[in-house]
Image (tube, rainbow, N blue to C red):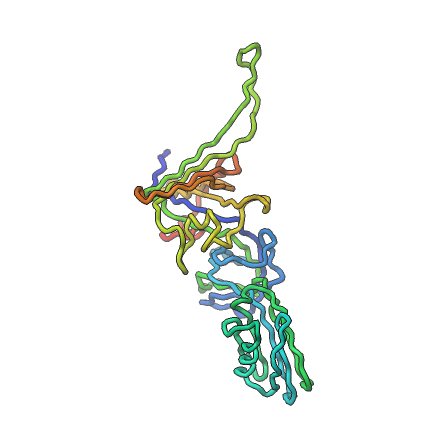
Length: 352
């Protein structure tokens, strides 16, 4: 039995081209945890990226739960171990600037003050902790956020002094995520992580989604009479979407807006291009999810790959945002499978 599509059962969404794999580097993951350590040197990410975007989704080996990244850490971490001999001094050099001498007996507060007194470091640019006696861990953030910092320490008369670059910076080594690890889920060291695209989705509501598949066959004539037909040049799909005109820019902590996703600005600044060639202009994939209300029908997803907006029209009077563009594809990519509703809702981040 067939049925017509109804807007109340349809969702419209957009997703970027982010993908890749990673490896867990954490042996202490337990139920309710929302942070995981990963091997910064084993991330294989889309377009050779080094940073996992906040908003990306992922699964871990053997677990179907899809989790969303709410924060990442790609900061440089540098560890100083004073050792048994504390009678000497040491200096710390950060990106070519060297601190005043710090005594081997000085406290965490004194080391922090010496670092902040440097010309290229402010109080918000570092966090210094003492994980164990006479061991200091410096994390660079603020102006150094997500970047590789060149840092070293030089001792004088400290015979057991040692340093370690714990994380080089500029590569993601920790993820904070939701939902938390649940009872019955086991994430172990060296498990494979599979990264999924960043995605936004909303009810069609009072909006609409229209597309046109274009064919331009060549009709041959024989003495001015129709004769044979040949395939003409490929023509991209035309797509027009309209939605309620709400905010164009998301506030802190709010979901990315469609406008931001299509412009790769604001909350979508880290979205990845879906174009096959990274040198091509930025594009996204649009999709329509149709969830029939009757259990006898399968859900359907239509993907409109590599969508390039060509015009955006907003009307305050009508309260409408209309976006028109073309897809670098000939027709929608359609999937229709007998999937469990709970699985569909989780995959697309929807509530029952």
